[in-house]
Structures are given as C-alpha cells and as structure tokens.
Amino acid sequence: MTNILHNLAGMAGMTDQVIATDYLISIKSGIRNLSFSITETATPELREAFREQLRAAVEAHENISEYMIERGFYHPHNLGEQIRVDLDTADTALNLAD
Image: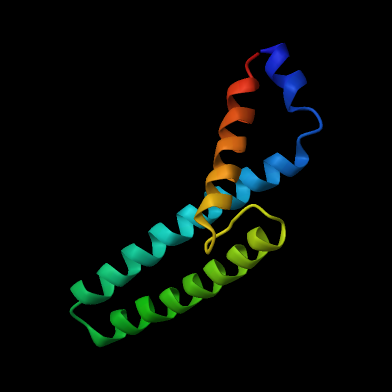
C-alpha cells in the first residue's frame, strides 16, 4: 500500500485526467438515460423537465470535452492519438502497484 501511495505522489495531472474521464463517461450515460426517459414519459411537464436536464447535460459534455481536448486527455477526432493516450494511461495504472 505504501508503494502505491508513493507512486501516486506527483501525479496531479494524471488524477485530473482520471477525474475528467470519469465525469465525461458519467455525462454520456446521463445523456443516454435522459433521452430514453423523454421517450417513455407520459406527461408533457415531465418531458419538458427531462429535456431541460438533457440540455444541461449536453452543455456539460461540451465543456468537459473541451477541457479534456485542451489538455491532451481526449482526442475524439484522432483515433490513433486517443489509443496512444489510453495505452499510456493503462501503463501508468499498471505501474502504480510496482
């Protein structure tokens, strides 16, 4: 356990990447669920409430995506570069326990 904590020291950038990625995944899941909910809702008032939440979720997705792109964490238009980032992140995670 001490070795893992020692390896985590000085990894603030990686921590930011992990938090941002988790947030992006959560937002995407929320957008999917809200979209589904809109189609399954019986009342216009509830549909409008879900639409408003969906608008906010799409805006949050845009904001976190831009944040991640600016910092080199996310490359939605360059699969090769995204794979490189993902492999580097996986290697870092595997090396934490060493």
